[in-house]
Image (cartoon, rainbow over all chains, first blue to last red; front, side, top):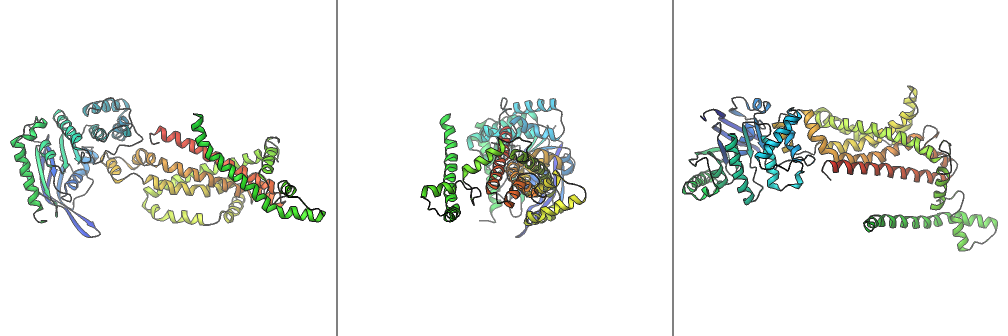
Length: 261
Length: 291
């Protein structure tokens, strides 16, 4: 059933021109992501995981290779509002209420008022923030703000969700809770999620596919299809299977680091 | 409540009191010479008390004492009909109207230029040096030429003075708004891009609201500059009317008390206008959840 390819990258390369010369952020990256996949990108900083996500979102342009998003170029996918993007920081506008912030992309996209109100209520419910619609961002905790920013990315109902270390700045307890919530949300909505992280447990716990990357040049060193069931209580992290996958991810990361040691 | 009010007012009041004491002291110091001259010519020797009393009550003192200025202001506001040419209210209204018109024009021009600078690369590279150059020319040199040129094309009255006000007031608005419109960070701009927002939408939803704190700060400076422009603009018109005219007429006839009362009036007007913007700022930012 999950055979539709959402993202297809072939021999993707991206070189940045900096003052210190060229930096190869991505080199010959090939990857297919299917509808309904939860894909984590993990690796040390400089491995190009965020750059790869930004290429999918048409925020960076690759210097070589091909990539399609929903069968289109990333630019066409962006113009068709084919994805929702969650940044590292919540980035809520301080002058808008939570409801106003979530309604913002809908206003930009020209949805009418009644539809906006409907959608806002629906996604606030999805991220369990019902009742906070009229609050201003500063009245919410960091975790709640990040949930609101996820709701904002969900508001226009794109099938693809791109998340760039969305929980990186949060403490571990809040993070566990949000991971659980994100999994439930993913199961309920059957969206395709690309998730950048540098936490091994987070990647293993969330993903159906783990993409291990390494730096200089940024490349994929291992792709692990997780055998874990879709239903994942937090305790699954103590299972032998979970630990085995985590070991493989760590080995992949260490292999990529070999040239540094 | 009363105590909290007092805590806010007390520092202001003690500052004002200190200034007034200094002012009276300076009046004694600067006017003594004239008082002694008069006494010498009359052949009398003044006691200290008489000397001080004289320095505070001369007709054309070098520095009038505060109560003399206060009395003059009272005489030319409360005790004169508003329509009278000698009413300071009448002159203030004339200065106020060109201040406000110039301020409005300057704000519109400033915001327009700032939007152009932020959105248009050519303007970004070329406009700012001209904007800065425009402010390095002394306004006193430019003002008569603006009046003469506009008069030659048949424009006179309020507009030329307002244009001089605009000339001074658009500058802080341009500088502040360029900074304000550029205050959103990369992430916020990328985010707009992911929603495929157009330039106009990014301006309306993100850049303009983000620039509000900068705008109000600029507006306060612009308002004060606009008042200066209006006063300066009244000088080359032959000192017909307005606070600037009162200043000029006062200096022609050595009427220092009149000069000082016009100065104080202009200062109070500026304080009132800047205070109004402050109130507007607090209301707006509070409404926006930013204060």
